[in-house]
Amino acid sequence: MDKRMLGDLDSLPEEDKLRMSAMIEQLQIRDSLRMYNSLVERCFDDCVESFKHKSLQKQEESCVRRCAEKFLKHSMRVGMRFAELNQGAATQD
Image (cartoon, rainbow, N blue to C red; front, side):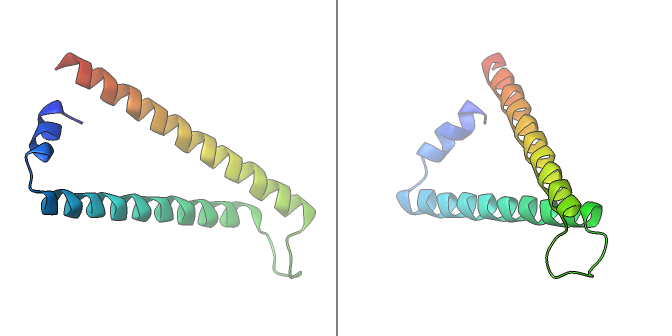
């Protein structure tokens, strides 16, 4: 985040700071739910082959586990890379 933006937030009245904080929290929750839903949908589509049994078959369960691990590792890597880019941009200012 740009240092000037942080300075602008500090100059806001306390009520506006609280409102901004609540908005940021809602956005974070929404993004977390989107990521979770995307993970469930993708892994389900890739791994579940039939509805013959009420629980996952062994191969389906291992596929879902691998899928979820890959998805989460990828998300973490993207987040780390994004943070690196933001930090690099902040030091250039």
